Amino acid sequence: MTQNELKELVGKAAVDFIEDEMIVGLGTGSTVKYMVDFLGKRVQSENLNIIGVPTSDRTAKQARDLGITVKNVDEVDHIDLTIDGADQIDKNFQGIKGGGAAHLWEKIVAINSTKNMWIVDESKMADKLGSFPLPLEVIPYGSTQLFKRLEQKGYQPKFRKDANDEFILTDSKNYVIDLHMGEIKDPFALAKDLDSMTGIVEHGLFLDMVNTVIVGREDGPEILNAR
Image 1 (spheres, one colour):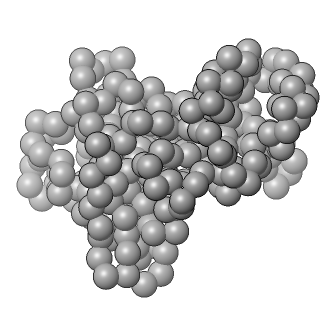
Image 2: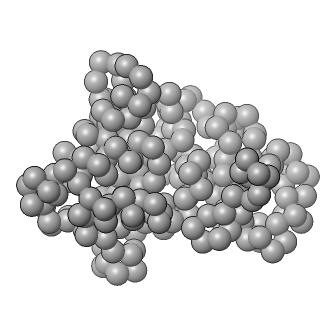
Image 3: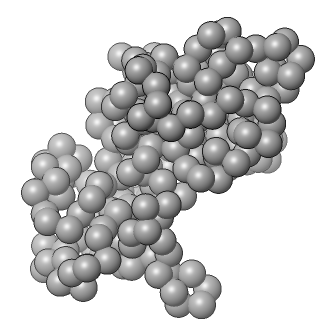
């Protein structure tokens, strides 16, 4: 099976966890795009009554186009389940997210959710985090000075830019700095350090946050209970 076929597989499996009258956080990324497509089909065919809380402008547009009712995170009093992708998950179910530059909104929705589910193809599973660069969403003002501090700490920072060498902007109009650390020995210590640094709005370490992981494998989706 191709990587896209594995992503489609877990996207379809995840939709089975969504029930009528739920408020559902809708993640961002290539895997979640399949899930939202399948959810749209269920909404149409079953007259499913759900509210979607998107984690990016592009997910919001996709959901609306499929007939899914969309509300902002501040317009709901709870979120039953958020389904999102992940860029890397270690053996302890800690994760890195933000490859799509949406990790700030993704984390806001996640921490306001009763349960969180990540859907990934098997290539995203790893013993340790760090081979996938760790994204930081940073305020543009002072970002060069922040970059220097990250360099001094040995975090191997790199501004995320497009093909025209322009800064990639998040939906909140911030920059992204990716840390190319190779291996993160202690994700909790690193998260604490990054949380203390002025100018970083949010980092892509999602720690002790996920309840269920669905992994797309050649022989079918594997459902793992994280906690």
